[in-house]
Image 1 (cartoon, helix red, strand yellow):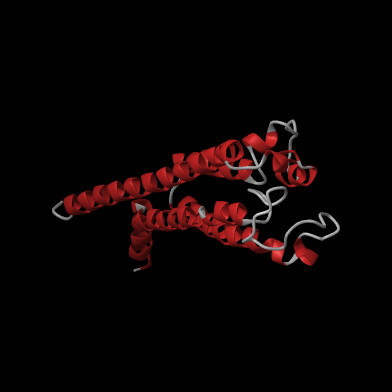
Image 2: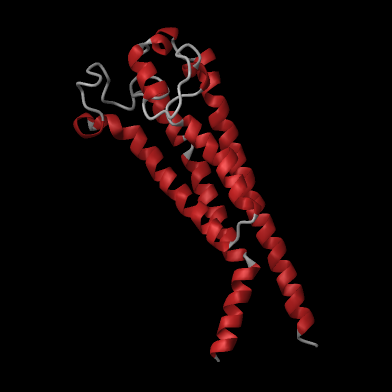
Length: 204
């Protein structure tokens, strides 16, 4: 009886730490989702050149490449661009749903996915440097193969250019934080540690 109370108190403390770590995962994911959700309309209305938004090559990359649904061309580049629908679905819908009953394995899945997405952000920045393998020149012969230039008629948020580079790289710190908090939440899960302790006791 004397040992039961400390164990119960330790479990409660561990559970509080797990809930706090899970909240950090949620808040980081929501912050990144809101950023991705707002950045395209803000960029389109205040920064982008109207010629780029109406350019067929830009519309192809922003609204047709990999899109599972059709959005009118005049609306699409001002609301979503490229993979942004997938991103804010992951940040604002998938991660919060996973967190409802998510425990150790779910936290690790979120951590691994976030690390993969962080890596992909770097790949997306530099994919135009290798046009023959990732973006054939005959598909868009005027595409600048540089992530550091700005062409007002072609290179904007979802194609080559500095805006495209900044959009992807700005997500990397959030994704790394999401991966870190997900890993920490997995480590803090009292159910996992309690299960491990029980298995060790049974083995003895």
